[in-house]
Image 1 (cartoon, rainbow, N blue to C red):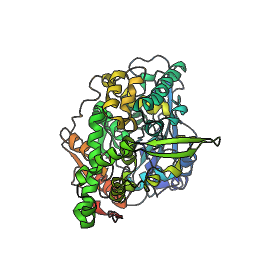
Image 2 (cartoon, rainbow, N blue to C red; image 1 turned 90 degrees about the horizontal axis):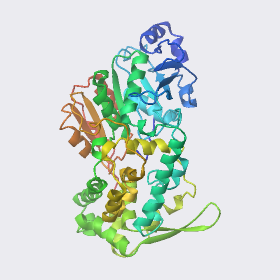
Image 3 (cartoon, rainbow, N blue to C red; image 1 turned 60 degrees about the vertical axis):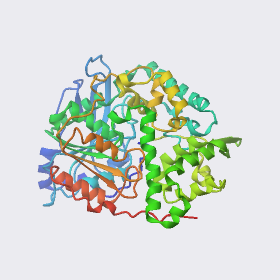
Image 4 (tube, one colour; image 1 turned 180 degrees about the vertical axis):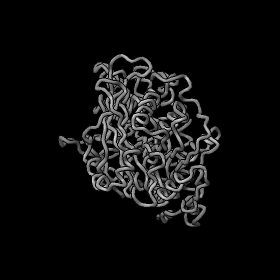
Length: 520
């Protein structure tokens, strides 16, 4: 999802491995995969130059996948996806797991390309231990053809223009803020259609078919599927449509379609509870905090009301030297906290107490005024794919403009929250089956990982999923936010992959201590 910033460490050189006869023999059966096919056959997989320097540095085996844009009704339009197989570093070691299913990574964002991010890839390898890792850009990503590019959307996106997006700070009128975004969404859809792209085909249903064709062409009977954020939702789609291809699943900080597509107001208030939960932690462990916030259950709403009555206003400089005014009301407070809770929770009680006393001295830092970027970009994203993924996977649940306008009038904070509300201005429904957003019923073993300070994707997602996936285990990492990077995470994932049906040892989940509360 938004703050895709995992930090890694482990890599491997395949050329050295291929110089080892024993390992070379193993690779013949596990990773010298691409089936020989006549040029022009679809689907097919061809050896190719690696799409990024990160993949080259890891000595990955790289391929290009050719598939139908529309699998159900082929029309001659072909997509091309970069695929890379990265073998384990110590495949000759007795500890090696080369005979186990490969781990296929499903990137999140949606649309965040990881194949050029060496640290990200190293972290994935650390997570999965001595196993084969398969990574790719899904259809529409920046290294795919076609790439669904709408770079202008970065200037208004609540996700990619973090905190200072017009959705939050351009005006005190929510309807004016809404207008700054909806036009860019409609323009993006028109642009992609004019480029001849079958926009409705860029969804989790089609991605699942792509991945399964790649699995088959690489010669794997089974895979372990590892998703990140929205990629975990894609993993569930893959299990739905290709259940016999999956041994087990890792659902990292998951954002599942079946909950994401609820009314944005419903999901917003569920996420908002995380803010109060953080204050409750403070008051439960500190008498000083309880004295500072005697009404902590009401503190978030009172802070919002104070900022609605007297907004915080800041002046920033544009690229041409001109000045711009940013407005932060109560909705902006909630939106910012949604994005920054993992960094700000220890300072939150003090900030709230100051605002209650009409002291706005901490808000310049809270709203990151010194980080204002006059030309926001999202270089690892094809932003047309971001919108296509979010909107197309809604299927018939996609809102109409009157739905989203009414929702914004009831709760202006959803303007800077999860983006499904803006799909009212996307051009059409995605081409997905009617059951696409139904809760998944499966007995596949799965492990879900959550961060305690992640308002987006907390354990409520797994609590819901566990009702229909009885072999789901889930864990919440103390003090961590979205995409938690800890030694415990890697230890737990590796152990789960060793035996997906065994009970995972969660004793390390408190490995990262809560920060000391900064009470002033």
